[in-house]
Structures are given as structure tokens and as C-alpha cells.
Length: 424
Image (cartoon, rainbow, N blue to C red; front, side, top):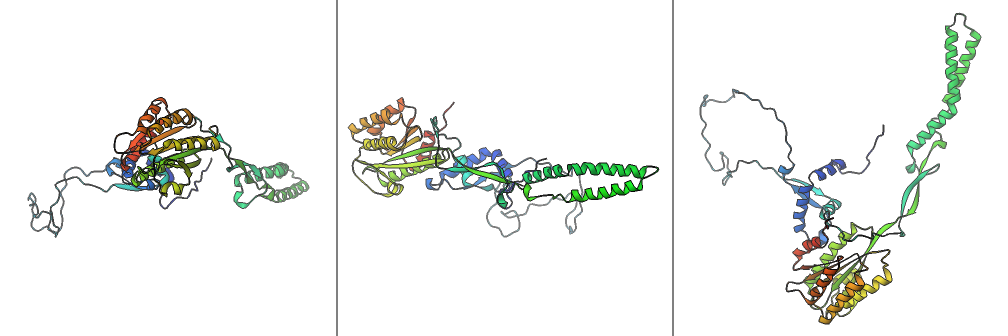
């Protein structure tokens, strides 16, 4: 028989198996509640937990009750004005009684109950949030040796700390030692006891032999009792070693147009889209590097703070960002070791001649190197010249997708459209 002891720390009155069973059973209701919760949250707050409410009618279960049945007559004390068969008049007043309540009662006879509410953790919320999404074209998923290490068990050793003591292995060794050391004495003790019993049961017992057997039995018991139950030699400790940990890794490129035509509202919408993509990638890869590239007439690789907060203005030459992107990939991120994802946000405004050049760079040089390229155009009007050129790329390449965002409410629907699961 094997006893499993769950020592995971749980909150008061909580049970991990019961919670997991509940989440599986009411998965559809929880997903619907998460979808409603997303509509009222900002993208920057998307990765925190959420309090979910499920209607009681969805989690109610049938129960058996015992009814009295038949016809019953009851006698109640204090009745001095009603007789059997009398009809009791309905009390007057809109509230249905003689109390001091005001207003009118509802005409519904249905008894309602409060919804069942519970708290989803951050991990549970993110699981339901991204459950039906995927990263397209995950064909490499390169496992490369990194500097990360993990500990793993590697047998047992005779020295160690008290926290690493392996009790079962130590007791097993102690049992084997006691059997090996005391085996001969234990067998001789059994034989001596049988001889003593036979000699005592004989008609003419040999008292000298009986005395010798009793003395031998006494010494054998002392010898067996002297064998320690647990000796320091028996102690075994879990041996753990550090081994290199292969990890899936990817790089995420964020390209943002910061020209004069991109106002603060459009930039904020683009930032929210990048944040959502980053949260999605963290669920798929263990190691993620993020590269930020801002561009107007020229492109520049910047850190996260400068990418989200610095202010610039000027014209728009999108090809400068694509050329810088290609340069960074070739110099620092070999396609054999990295899964590369690119997200570009722009209002679509670009020099006419430059848009054609962007299409050429994208289709011939960049897309063969990347896993997926997502382009979002943040505009409320007609498609710009860059959108028209990129449409030709989308028709020819499977790892390129494009969508239009008109307001912040479109961020999540557009994201789901770009990364929805493809049919098998």
C-alpha cells in the first residue's frame, strides 16, 4: 500500500483537487464569465486575477426530499376566531403585510438566489483567456542550450543535511542490515527453542542439556537485541545535481510608427496591443527577449521606457524600420536558435515609393526568417498605401497577417483574429 501525502500549501477551507474538479465541470460558464470580465478591464490589468460569478441555476443539482403526503389536520394554540373551513382574507397593503414597508411588491413568484462567486487566480484567468489561441507556424521551437540550470535527483548518498534525508530508503537499508547480521543467530534461536521444547516434553529430560539450551537462548536474544534498529551507516540522503536546462526561446520585435500622423491615442492603442502579445508569448516560451524599434524618417532601437514614453515627430519612412529589423536579426538572432515574431503598428501613412520597397523587403528578406509577422493598422478612414502593398504580401505568405484597429475596443477582437487556432 502506498500513502500519498499532499503537502501543498492551501488557503483556509480550500482544496486543490476539489477546485480543479469544479473548474473542469463548469468550464463553459467560467469561460463565458471571463469573456464578460475582459470587456471591462484595461489591457495593462489583463494578467491579474478576477472575481467570477456563476448563476446558481447553472450549478444547482437535483436533490431528493421526503414529503409528508396525505391529508393532515393540525391544532395550533391561540386560535380564537377561525373555525374549520373558514376562508382567510388576503391582507391589505401593497407590501403584502401589515409592516411599515413602502412601495409595491413584484408580481413574480420565482424565488431568486445570489450568484455563486469565487476568485480566479492569475494563472487560471490567463489559462481561460488564451485557451483557444495559438502561435501559428510553431515549426522550429528550437531547444538550445542556455546558461540556465535545474536540479534533478541522481540517486542517494551517505552524507547530507537533515532536510534531504530519505526516510524510506534509510529504513529499507536498516531492515536489510538487521536481516543480514541477525539471520544466523535468529535461525539458531528458533532451532534452540524447538530443541528445548522437545527436551522438556520428553519422558526423561536431560537437565544438563536443558540448562545449556536455556543459557544459549538467553545469549542469542541478547545478541539480537544488541543489533541497533537504525544505525548511522543506514542513513541515505537524496543526491541532487545541477544539469543544463534546455529552454525554448523566442525574440519579439515591436515596430512602432512615431511620426507626426500618429497621435497619442493611436500610440497608446499600439502599446496595448504589444502588451497583449507579450503576455501571450510568455505562456508559450520559457525565454523571451523583446526588441523595440521606433521609426519616423529614420529607425532606432530603444529600450522599453523610451519606446513607450519618448515623444518624436516627423515624416514616415517605414522601410527604415524594416532594414533595421533585418540587420538586428542577422547580427544577433540566428534563425537556427531563435523563434522570431514581429508585431508592427502604424497608421498606414507612408511615402508612396517607400511602400513598394517595404513590400519587397518584407516578402523577400524578412518573412523567410520569421515565424510570424502581424501588422495592425490603426486608422478610422480608408486604407492607406502601405495597407494596399501589404495585402499583396498577405495573399502570398502564410506567416503574415494584417488587421485594422479603429478603437481600443477592437484590440482584443483583432488579437484573437490574428492568433486564432487554425483548423487541422
